[in-house]
Length: 312
Image 1: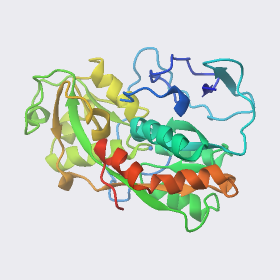
Image 2: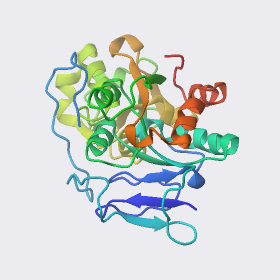
Image 3: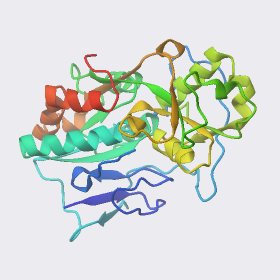
């Protein structure tokens, strides 16, 4: 049974679409083929960040993700029942959405277990974990939050590992806007530049770091619009609400549409993405099996196909 878990403040979207405002739990049963981090950024990223501009129709009010009054919408038949012994709920950084869906399908086929995902920024997900959300494992977009989870007694010691290394690209829906050198960043032609919130999303922090390294951050700062997650950031650029966006390579790796510039690796700190088994999943066979599968050659092939590095 496919279901979407929503906070009362969120708007229901059909399966296959990512909502612009808020996050959803997306079971792999609702997989589509085109899926397109509140803690601190790394200590080296100390410059002040601009406050996000809110697109029309989106509320920036922050709601705890899991509440006693969570609404569960069944997208197929009936309402969601209690989690079974062979089910697991995994919190996943938004940049990993498309890869996670494909990995989830392969995992279910290989093991018979079932997985439901909760996608969001790494910082938002970590906050939900500290508030008691029923996640059994955490796939972050950084190393800091899994380390904090373990130090706080929320994660199972010895289970942390790097499952992917991410990259950022400058992307536009306009196929003629960005050249091979990313010169558009030095131009006055840009009206809006989309990035993920650098306080909660590691990919947003990497975007700020890259712009600082290029010497364009101060000039572009007033033109920056922030997405709550990297998924929303991609949507801003894809819909033309922003001329360009710093997005995850994984979001555009499977599609040649638009124009892009691969941001050189030496302009930002490596985006190492760690996973950890959480205490709520300490006795979950399905959660342990999922993390084991995430280390498998089959999962590695999927991860690499979406533009990530593997191997820790």
